[in-house]
Length: 147
Image (cartoon, rainbow, N blue to C red):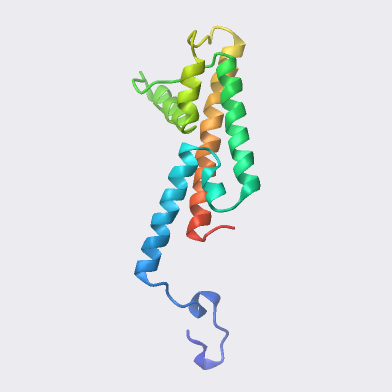
């Protein structure tokens, strides 16, 4: 209903519609921010001038990858045998540029025969999932949906 009958107007009705060209531009910028945030953890938040979150994301993902690779965790490859290998690969790939850093640190190969290697695998996957969630947050902020 409109505000003509004396009823209050909702904020959605008050807001004027955004022109399609401006909406498309905002969407493109949000996509670039999300891609940058995935590739270099925290970069998307830095582009949005959210410095604290940018530093936290970069350090969290970096430390998790460093510890996981130091424990000789398994980095999954794209030729997985089952669904869990494929999901593990996607989680590892979620670390963005740190994936190749972890590959470089994995000189002796994974060692999941001990608990250290098994925990290292979890650290690497956690780093990727955290970075993907941070990239999603940066995307939503760039679109104007979150603060």
